[in-house]
Length: 249
Length: 311
Image (cartoon, rainbow over all chains, first blue to last red):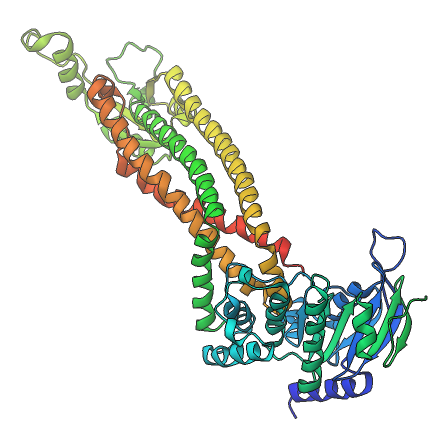
């Protein structure tokens, strides 16, 4: 067995044991702050799970996402993503690691000078996909998010909900195992917000993609009855399967 | 990197130029302005240096040898060198690094020149014998006028040499001028480059901050640092290249015009001031400007993009 195959086997074993995402007594302190952004948190997320992460501003939700993306390294404890200990990843290995993770921002972060197709294809070009693959994958994923007819449209011709769909398509086109969404409904009207979370749920259900949604939207969290992780001041105060938006800490 | 990605990077580099045309124009203008000043300054300095070098080439040291007819009473028999010894000393002089040329002047040649200059041909015919018999000399031209003092000291230490003629003031003035040019040009070039780097850094920073989102997305999607950086570097190099070509074209025309104006209007100047031709100037200025332009563009982009890569 080659070294690569051996590593892959070890990772699969770790995913089985710890889940696709695992926080083990993780703390993250910023030198400019007096208290840790996350404080001794432990969490396991299994393959194919849909998890809401809720909490007030400054509760550590975004830090948690940054730790998953290896934008930050924990000051204490270990973070495992897809069986890889993120603190052990060298800078040069981070791009390949991130290709397993799709990321959706609150403010969409689309490229306004490119059309819908090019915004999605942009993610494929970055991973050096074959042109034929791009021509096949981009329409497919645009169909999946309900924008098949708008691939030529300019970004400023789309509604907020449609822009977020483009962002989701861009996050999905490289077929990531994990999809992170940081306040994906924060800039949307209630109807669009509802549709976007439904879309994320559909992706999770149909493709088995692990989805983590950071949100403040109580209605949506309560309605979807998924696993809810509630954070307060850097600590996980509750982690409930089929739960509701937790108000107490 | 795949060839396809290379082409994509090149396409993006060019596309970025047009996508951000105001930023590109501002950057090109900044580089062009800086390199224009540098080019003008180079033209002035190069011409000044060439004039000084020409003047240096005219500075000579003349040495005379002891001979039995000279009026020097204290020379010994041993100091009277024969022609072979004079030739040998000539070789020693030529072997010195600061000497560019040493012309041997025999007593007959010396008399021919002297007689023609001071008496005219007819009067000189009255001399049956050469009054300068035995007066061998060398006219020595220097490649480095600042070392004239060392050469004179060395010449004076040779027993056969009776007299060394030289102008200390000319040599000092010229070598001083040379040193001044070197210091002033170094100072001005450093200041110009520092100003260029500062202006270009600001312009590139402004341009890139507009595109921080694009870099940010690329990093989140899993782009390597090289993939993110390459189009920006190419864009920086292209901006530098265009920014270098503009002042080169302007200076080429301006220099040609100035040269013909000076030659036509102040013809007397060209008798003793040798201006460099436009080709001589551009042989150095073209590669210098292109390299500086591309280098500034490359470094400006490299350092500015680096700040945005830590995502």
